[in-house]
Amino acid sequence: MKDCPSDVITDEASALPLVRCLVENGMPVAEVTLRTPAALSSIRRMCEVPGLQVGAGTVLTVDQATAAVDAGACFLVSPGLHEDVIRYAQSVNVPIIPGIATPSEMARAISLGLDLVKFFPAEALGGVRLLKAIGSVYPDVAVMPTGGISPSNISGYLDLPNVVACGGSWMIPASELAAGDFEEIGELVRAASELTK
Ligand code: 3PG
Image 1 (spheres, rainbow, N blue to C red):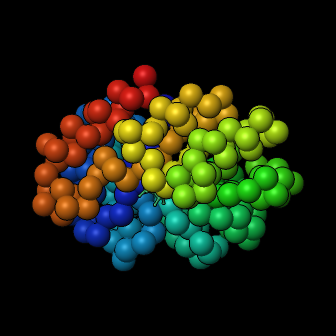
Image 2: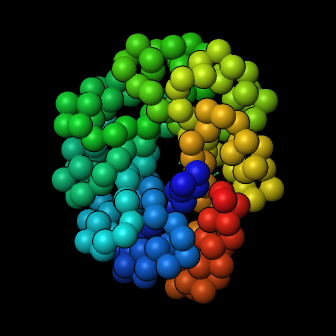
């Protein structure tokens, strides 16, 4: 699977219908960003349903990482190299995908024992062109770009050999989620899932 929605849930009541919508439309992995008070309780509820791997995103502190793991998150994502969070995740054997933006940060990630990183914010940094250049010198590190990715530019990322997944929030628009429009979200998720095949 080379695709993963990254969503901001503001109301945990949407968590269960969202899980059903993702699973039914071919999306087995989701990242719930810790940017709202409802994020942790949503992760807890989403993890109760089989069929979806739920991770926590925007993890900035060890306290957040601990709470997310306690809630059931099976992977952690950070926008940058938070070394204390990385060490915590490694100590509890929970996969962590921290963000890098430069070759030097890639080198630091490797020295921390990582073989999978997030490239964030992908489009603002220079997109496919920059990631291709970084990948040419660090081909053994798998990368998940996120930030500004959409159906119009995702294929350029997916074509890179070091890209194993892309993240994006476009398939779960905040307005549709707030309105409970899971039909529309389902169509976007199914289309995103098709793009990865
Ligand atoms: C993330 O946390 O990965 C990003 O906020 C996702 O970026 P997008 O909203 O531009 O897809």
